[in-house]
Length: 319
Image 1 (cartoon, rainbow, N blue to C red):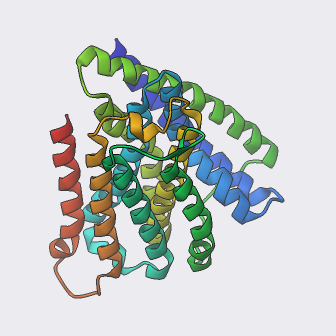
Image 2: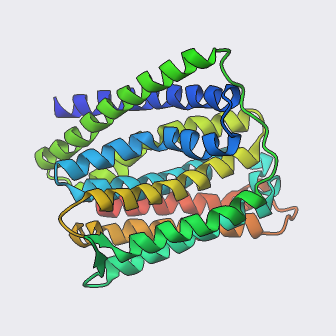
């Protein structure tokens, strides 16, 4: 029964999050607010709301492993999406058709975030300020400082088609979808916690793979929609941007977790998830910086295939 509840909650999260993103896109185009402000906070918040509600509920039920695993797992699942799509559509040579300067800064900042988290997980103790890990404070400051250079490097993106809705309808729809995501995301986290107890699975595995995959499916829809329009910059940019935003949400969960720094309370197995994210991000950087050559489609796709295999191996080991 608990598995059925988990699957139903995951399906509702995915469906509601897709509508949330669509309504947010309409608001960004029809409101008088700055496109940059709406895009940065409303759209990014919309696509990351499933991860946020799930992790916050995990904090509330005192399961920090699911909270941290969900955020780190969502990031590596996002990179897996790029890897699988690149392998399937290898003849299109995704990384040879994008603006490298627009994506390398985001990948580098994401790499630095993961390196900071890995060091924090490896250290036996952690320095905290008001119960918040100092590594989270560094990450937030770095994010704020890096946003200027990242936004300056962004190229012109083709807009995805939006629904023909009025602004009022879009706002109401956004609020309703957000409430549905909040409730279903909470159920997803609680049922995931219960699933770990009933099956004996590690909470970090449940958070890093099962819940993370569920909350990241809206990003898959976004990437496929961008690919359909041959808008490869948006496909990569949406994933890298979402990963940076997710790490900020991890910092927020640390603020709300009142038992001390959240990384000091989680299982050591999260270090493998963080290291996997680091390796996959390095592969993304290689793909972005690799010079274009006339190699065969399978040779071109070999790094992305390696990313997918790494994901499978690590998930099998942790399971």
